Length: 165
Image 1 (cartoon, rainbow, N blue to C red):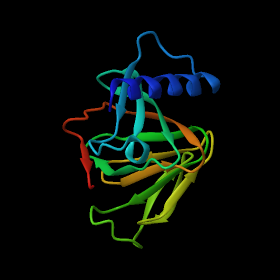
Image 2 (cartoon, one colour):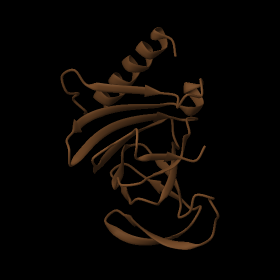
Image 3 (cartoon, rainbow, N blue to C red):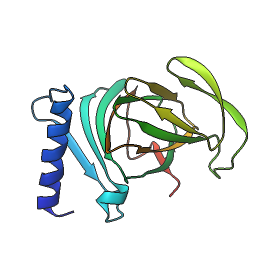
């Protein structure tokens, strides 16, 4: 992305976060990514690290309508994905082949729920899903945009993310 595009995304994201009551920390750590695909409007995500400790981390993310976050899982990280504003669609699988139909359990809003591999879980503002290692997932905003929270065990982007696409 060009610097002018990154700056425009940062300004828009900052405005959206503040509109929904998120006071940003001083000198936030931003990550604006298109996952190396060269098309932020289809494959982009805005991430901001709110806290990065050895044991846990917290992120605030923003996805606009039309952006798709690729299917992935983590070797070690357990994470809660929370819709802070808007509706977030999270598709889940229990296998790297993304075979559909096999039943398994995930925690949604702190209660176990049985789902089928390939199901889409819709999270409205305030709702959350807990994802453990081995649960493959992709997500996207259903509406104009979605403000997304993540609270997780320690984050290691280099060694712990396993993308399928």
